[in-house]
Length: 246
Ligand code: NDP
Image (spheres, rainbow, N blue to C red):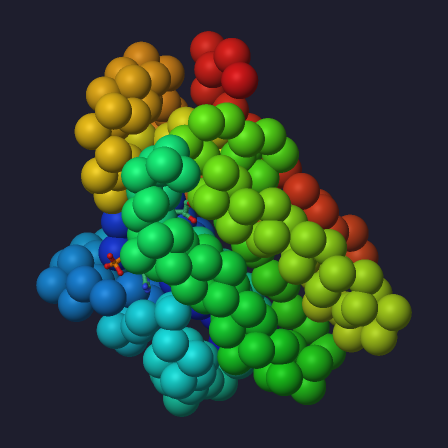
């Protein structure tokens, strides 16, 4: 079977959608996971119209069983998992005084636990195959923080810590499992739609309108990391719009 089997969480829009489409064009087989079935269905149809191969599984990454079902869908359809892209995430920025505790919970559940569940779902298969690649989406916010971004940054710092420990463990186990962190700056997607703090939203939207790059740029970066020869792992890639200052 030619082409890698690539599972993408958060594949219904933005970076996940752009990556699914680009990798399918390159001959890879894509398994898309997210909650919005109508969007997933449409993207699979677009990929198939273009001559590619893809399936979807409605997935809530905050639920362990749901992520296991996504891995099962990949194995039932394509019999292996070469790349698992932990991409699902949300960014409802707010200052702490707003006490948006439900949003804090959601970010921890999706941005951190979702990544852990992805690792739990795919690692046994990758160990058995003696090959595999986790690509975990962190952020520039995983390197620095700012008022209103404390919880989101915390989750993205966590993604980097989790990824680095996983990398060290797999290197020690000589499993040939690679780990890559992708840390983008502002990318024009639906990410800012989840912001409900009306004091912060206009400023963030203005920044995005001024500088954000297209999600295809991130997809190209993911492809680059994937295509590195198997004896080498791109451990982290930071990318920003050229005109983004911080
Ligand atoms: P989008 O909002 O366009 O995409 C987010 C994706 O995550 C959607 O497909 C959404 O699908 C999915 N998602 C959200 N909650 C869940 C859930 N519980 N279960 C499964 N899927 C879920 O934004 P981006 O493409 O920008 O975001 C992708 C990743 O990139 C995120 O991790 C984000 O933090 C990161 N990032 C983005 C940057 C940017 O500037 N855009 C910069 C740095 C990092 P659905 O709602 O259908 O479930």
